[in-house]
Image (tube, rainbow, N blue to C red; front, side, top):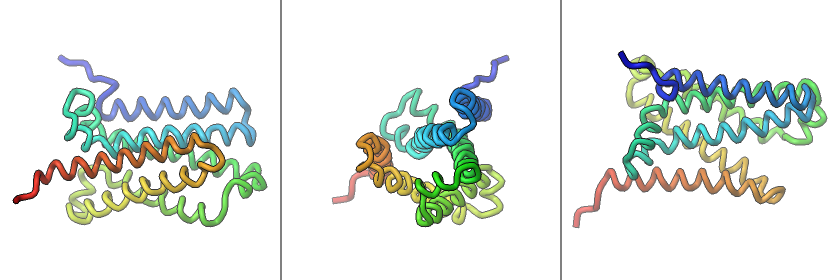
Length: 202
């Protein structure tokens, strides 16, 4: 009898969710349930969300281009990484909401209506992708509609990551790193798609 691994399937999802929750609570208890504490959680979950999204976004392409134990593990658990990304961004949203309720002046200094609209659309996609991440959803929506929803959702989220981080590069050059990582993942997916098609007939 084999022992279920915490690095596989739903155990992996729950492990990542517990780590995310512990991280957020740890930061708040360490810094205080204050504006700075909420902003720290917002920044931390922005980073964890990016990492988890990239793991799900690039998993299949990486496995196709560089087959191996690690890339196959990524592809095998890409659903769990996607749902863990949704969990990370849920915590991110709760921190933003709490900041808005506790310190609206700081919230509006850091945000605007445009970013709220674009962020709201991204969250609708994240929620839709999370709800339809189960096999039953494919049967309810149909393979074609399900495919279009997930295609549009992941690409909108990828572009959102590029835009939201790219506009902050003038503030700090460190924001170029997440932009570069997402662009690299996009190139990876395109390259994997080209390989799957094979060389053009001559």
